[in-house]
Length: 425
Image (cartoon, rainbow, N blue to C red; front, side, top):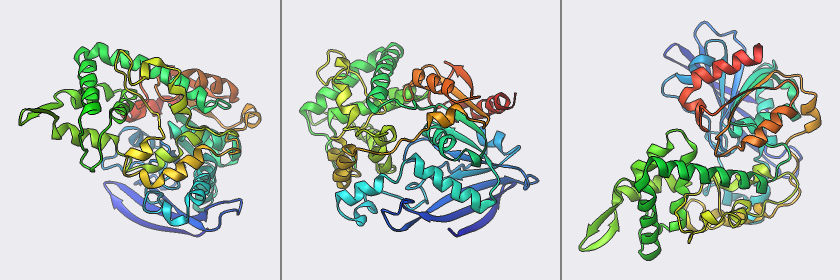
């Protein structure tokens, strides 16, 4: 597994760009190798500092590309060399998308490949990189899905970890996809209510847009028709602290009149299309439910569980946005996902995916761990996070309703400092 590195210097930091070659499938069932990329920041004078590796949220999102060193990264660089890892399939780590995935074969071959892009493989990649960089245990920070990966890391390779910090990312150790989506639909309903309370006119505006889309053809800049059900998925923004305002601005003036006919403004369609497209991160849609699969197939759990919540029906008396949920019909409507539909269907039906967490190992954990848990998190159920916090030996929590899911992005310097203090107290 050879390592190659290129380096440059930016504003008081050495930046090392590492590429390591790893097996695609460590069981040997699928041949071949892939590349895994990581960008390491080292502050001048801190060349001998311990390393901290960052696991990005997602799944399917690359590591940050900071144009300014600030927030949690600023705090971390005061005592660590920071490694920003592009998880396999993202960024510069042999990406998976509608261009590359069809090249591996038919839908069955594509689905088989996707089973090797879960947290267990990501952890093994991180271990390969760590060993190439010097084999010393490193510290780790995980946001959201990054915390899921670190829980897998603690289960499968704790010897590689010096200390662990998690924000908004303690998964249920044995919860099913159905359990997760029941909890997140309930929380999404609450966020819809809070959004309507802040912006009372927006619910009526959103309903008017949905009704219009049911009766008129409106095309997004990418050429496809915008459906009312896809429009409702803009509600994923409600899980972010700044999401209420962002969604309000999308809805502030969506209609115009063209030759006597009511139409959606081009500005609205541009912004909605930008937010709705999976073109930048198709892997997120492909593997989102599989991160909860531990034995049983997910079978489009979010789509099935939705029927249990009448408030999210398309004909419900009150309009409601959905949240971080992926539906099978999105693979019919989003051009970035259409070529991947067959693989997505087979992955959703896949039985027997291995467990990602080991409760017995976690119960005997000796790695110092601190986690920020958000009471009102719309994406990671609070009850499951608290149960996992109790199940991991020695894990300390900072529990708060001060933040939504994006607390690390908005107040990262303070949050990371709190977790460092907590883990070392």
